Image (tube, rainbow, N blue to C red; front, side, top):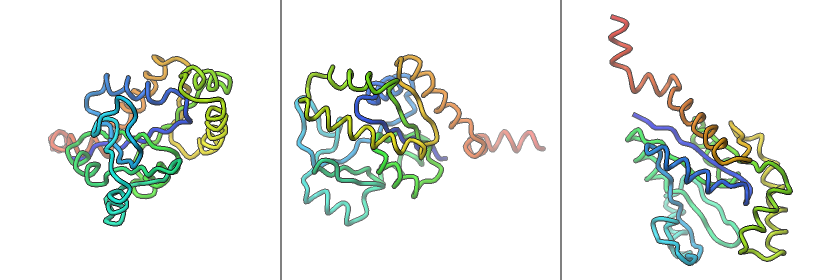
Length: 203
């Protein structure tokens, strides 16, 4: 059996992480892919939970072996998704969620054309800036850079299958769950899961 592969992307500040955490809390069948990264762990981050933290040398060795479904360099650090883990979970009929940027999403779509991609948008540019400033962790220069990057990210929104406007977390979560449910009811998946029932009804 084969589960669904979901990709979720968004500009920084759109509320993607909060939405993902809410989805995982309500959909235990979905597994979040933990990326590998060469980035230094931040305070409170646990290896194997936030990321799999590896050295630059280890990451490049893994990339050379073809261990990654997708990988990218972002702000001087490498990030990658384990191809083996994805295949293993998918074969168990587990749904998998990837939190990646539009570049990684394009790589995954080229390899897994049946994946379901979702782009999260903030309700306005003003709200996006308010959320970024509300974090209280970035300087004005960093926020300015993130706002510029957000405009570049949004330029790729049409490449995704679904778009969710995250104005209210509860409403956005309902829409996210609707996409997940629709994917689980696709004919290709239902035929695999319920083949014995279909055979019985045709006898």
